[in-house]
Image 1: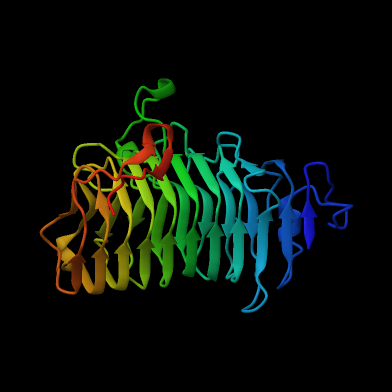
Image 2: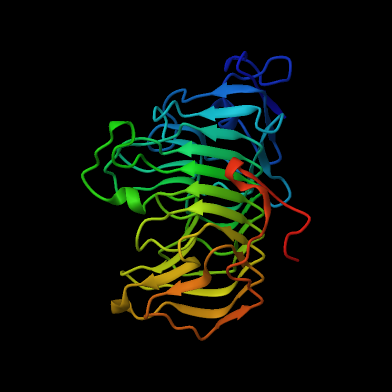
Length: 348
């Protein structure tokens, strides 16, 4: 076990008595089976590493099947990854084929990139078997920018990923008039997301609370085909309300090659105060319709809209809908205050 503390030094051994100062030093030291315990305090960008751009923790060393590498806040949300309102663009980036990695219990805020993409946690292609558990990711991308790149809570482009029990909220760039911002385009309407599932098979997004994602979608499924995608038991509230930007989950086929979703489930989610529908489907008709194979959408509650809004170029064969409750108040305790437990009189 390696230990990290704001009062430590990277010239130390990383023991509990002589902890490292930066999480990056621990990430550069781990071997399969190692755990990194991070003490309470603030951790900022400490200098260049193996990742492109300003990344607080670049993870390029992973574990193995029975020997995961674990990064864990010693106390839940006590270790704070702070981007300094754009001084760093990403909190954790898992890259270079690093696999069998868990990131657990951190608070992440202030990460942004006015000149490119930003994220609380980015899981890049090449790796697999990655878990993102119980983190509080908020105030991501809060800068004035014209970039077409997304500012995201979690970006997923890897196989066998579990994102579970995270709070992801208040993600997205500044809008016109906010803090004097005057962007030159309308990317602020739909480019920033809570969870951006760009690609990867066997991805599970469950038991997360995702809210105040107003410059994009709570969950974006775009642009690649995928199998075994499971979106389960999430609470999603207060999403994008721009005209024509429907839904809290968007599933959109790329104009470059279309998209097929297979062997997947979207179930037991609560959608609160969405724009028209819980899920919006569409894509470029030039590459043929979006296709489904053995996909089920069931047992979801939508407070003020319908389940689906879909473009014409959708092939609905292979998609089953069952037992969804539309226009039904889930009866949260105090959603305006971000308090989403259900009251005793909530629908069964």
